[in-house]
Length: 308
Image (cartoon, rainbow, N blue to C red):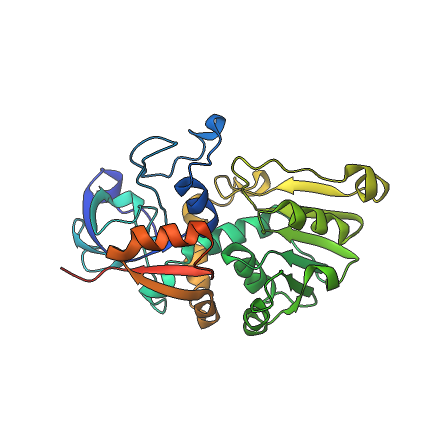
């Protein structure tokens, strides 16, 4: 959404939250106090309150309706990087209007689709590529959903959970358990946030292939078999993090452009398959504990805010 004059002048808006979503991997690590001390500043959410290790108000997938502020925004559904909160006041420049054709309840996926989009910019797939996506969580599934739109690719979603096969089918890609995954890949996107997943990603590569790692491991130490295929096959491993647009695109695309494109991509109803649970805001403390402990599996856990 173009920045309006009122936003440039710093006009504020009051937003009533309609939905938010739990970013399972990152929010679980924050909930458990597992942010490394040397990453406290880097891992701050844009509107975080409090300091790591905690307590903190955290989160960044928020969809609401503007109650007061710039005339062109009042009454509009908007996406922002605000934490889980019923109502908040923020600069209008921090809000992005949700385009027509994107339901507000689906728009909570915008930040995750944006992360997936940035990963594809980091390692642009080429026609004919053989690609695996290791880790069928929210991020991995969004990567697979975008790759399914490309012609001429072989795309396989890889996960230890056999129930994700139905999700892969809905997204239009094949599925495999890690042990049965198809190798000889030109490119692997890794999003399992596990050492085993990253090791398997390297094993699946063809010579000269690349792994793009989207996972954040928190304080977990990761060991890789760099004495095996890594050197003999001349493999590459690079990170992808949504906090920065890839260098080669920074002169042509802004963060606002990227988010706008992610929201536009969410016109596709296929993304609804990624929402596997919904809870009321009042239930969030218990729900977050269940997610962090692994007792509430799934993909996107959407939080519903009943109007007061």
